[in-house]
Length: 371
Image (cartoon, rainbow, N blue to C red; front, side, top):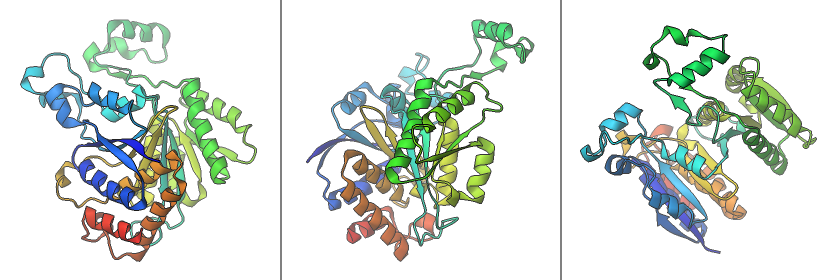
């Protein structure tokens, strides 16, 4: 079977790690037409849109996407880098990966954190946890104000008397971001976590939230989780406050199997988990919706390393493994993971982050040779 894959290298080292991953996919026998999509900082600067409409159209004509990395900067810095002809015309930078997640309703972000034996960067050898992060809501819903409009200030002053200090500040001295949790969003991510645990024979799902303080939003996540857990008697569910969860992941990461959390909390925990197993050079992610999926390493574009071919491509290679798994190419996916494990265990080829001097493509070739 042949697939159509949207190839979205993006910025910086994203271009290099996609090249490495395609080498591995070719070697494992994956048949695909890769269709290049334009995305990232250069298109923001030239067009005022880091996710052009033509790229969105491309996604609709493909089976799924491989995404490299993008450069992202704060609003004011982004505005300064716009082409002069676009300045002061209302263009506001928005992360294209966040845009894809919301536009395509890629509600489930799955981030495996697995320690490969022989990796000198492992904190502990027996870590194998998967973080399920809600991908479209929470504090990343994009509902923010600064300055805060008068009508929003009035709502707070009228209805939230526990914190009524808005009247003490001018509008441009207060910023507000809404944390949005819907029952649909909570249900999709929590059920995805339980379904994964059931399918993979994992016995424990841990909900990481903060319902003792965020009573309504984390409270809703907790209520939904407790209800869904009843459908999975073969899986034990426990609950942890997000701050305590960070401590326990550092102290006893091998105790956890599947962790599920809202957007920001899951983002933080998955990066913590990545460091336990070698850092972002080993951290892959699947963004999965009902109709489409995007697969990526979780590292950034690393502008200072761009063009040097020195970053670790394993995260991108493992992202391609997640893609194969999603497409039902289970044997190919397993071969790639086994090849990565073999190269790491052998220890002869190590990239800079692993204490060696191998290039991006040296590592790719080593994995290819095992395959």
